[in-house]
Length: 384
Image (cartoon, rainbow, N blue to C red; front, top):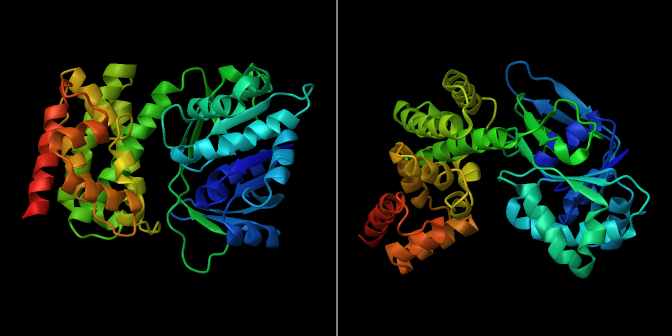
């Protein structure tokens, strides 16, 4: 069996690639980073180190890498004969992945089993998004080519921090992980992924994860950055920040109870586990890494505006989530392109226009005024 995985970075090697290897797949990583591809191909194995209580070291073998920029033909051949294709590249990069999948499907034997495609991204419906990009790239051949594949949405969760210098292709991760995959697209022919669980309805899993793990992680980063704290674990050691993050997650849990009927007590336990994971001192993670791409993180269907809008529509509290958005508006990291763009736009756009375009909220939405007021406050602070 063979799997092609787009994105040979830390998450690709330390999470998705690891589980695919343990499922018996030969793993072919696809990436555009020349040095990384060369390093992977020079290694016969790499180690995934689980940092924290109960963590073990896992050795990965049976892998190689293809430079998708330099060898698109070779990548298409790999996809044509693969059983599984996965991604961990970021939702905005999926449109660049789609043409390679299209070319692989063109070369795939019509008699082969359907290619099993799963986008493992921090976004709702990421595989649906990837399928739409494949359809667009395939043009008139879309129906014929997509018939050679199945597309299944997933919810993935594992903290993989920035790696220490000199680690090579080894990866440090947290012991905990979750990979939920919708089962229906496979028609019973499930991929071999140990530790993954297949579910009929993915929505509760992906929203629970996105609105708890991703909301909490980013909120910790933005409140921590505001306080001048560098590490995520240190930020949560601050009682005020811990209270702010907890308040935001209580609001997202209230939304999940209303939307999916999840058990409040189980959600409370889930929140506590998530915050304990963030506190893991052996995961040296920074607020700069977690807070990067703030414009994406305050967009309509993301970790703050998504649950806050749902709360406002249902008459539930969204003030703590709004406070997290306000902290995100202050995220000013010259090394992050979106952070630079965010601060530039705040200086040059009026509050109404910025709020509408950045968050996707209609001015008549019940959440709009609170977010606009947070934008005004940030703009006033900038102009002082």
